[in-house]
Image (tube, rainbow, N blue to C red; front, top):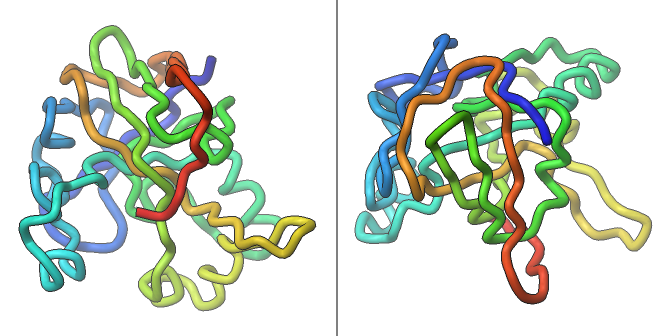
Length: 179
């Protein structure tokens, strides 16, 4: 079990988000007041390609432990800086399978849809940061560390300090892929 250490939201399409003490998640939409909330894609590059695609990136989560790893590499990154809505601690988000449900606080439930695929905006935020959030495993496979994406199954309020309970999907585990 993990916990929520920070929450962030922004009503405009900026790279970083603004810290907030609480968020309201809306079922099927995302974070109330966030530019990326909606049933169909809201990320501008995806809207240009096909605005009718389902929004599999309603809520972006990052593990707080990434910030310490990046600090060791000389980067100053904190909650909300990479555009995430929910910062967690004590969960290996990247290793969870697709379809995992995270229970945030008393009511809200999100389902993991995939990995965040880092883009050039990360380097615009801090030069060299994109390379720092990518790695390779022993077999040479690319590891994306910039968080996970999810959809909201059950709405509710989420606050800093809330617990995060993990509900694994039934059946064979399917690894998270970029969305």
